[in-house]
Image 1 (spheres, helix red, strand yellow):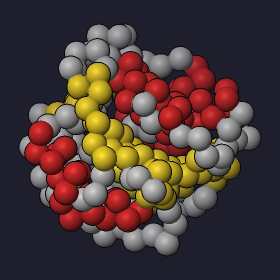
Image 2 (tube, rainbow, N blue to C red):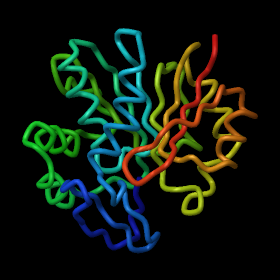
Image 3 (cartoon, rainbow, N blue to C red):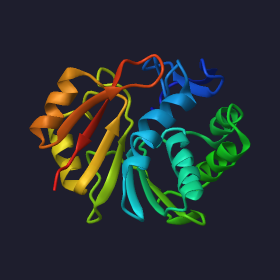
Length: 223
């Protein structure tokens, strides 16, 4: 999640870890109630850890700080699973602000954040013994892929900030990009988003959210 026309500021969240505040959008990259807690809850516990395939093919919509990618790689290492991670980011963060952001995280997370920030766009990089990573300087509207994914992390800025991303056409596209029994996970629980996901063909579940958020959304592509 990002926008290159904004002033960006690193801030501390309630769990002691850092996020980034985007002044133009008046929005943060992660929850102010706990950046690390949010990513672990939404994308690891209710995303990666719910997928049974090996390797797990992941597409992230909004690489942003790289936190979701770093936590996924660490979880793959811990559970001895393989991950092929692909991310979209039209407005990449500078290495300097990622360096500031990474100071708010444990060493293993911080080291991976630095690695991710240093990877050249379009380059497939073996980021760990269990992980392959690449990212594209593009948005989901223009992204095309013959690859299919087991899991999609939908981590764009909120619908009221980036309305062109949270659309029925986009959700139809994501449905087609998923393998049968694939899963989309997002922090967003707005009714209009859940209705569009259902229209696109997903089985939608509202489940408890991370600290400070009552609900989050899971969308499943049934075989």
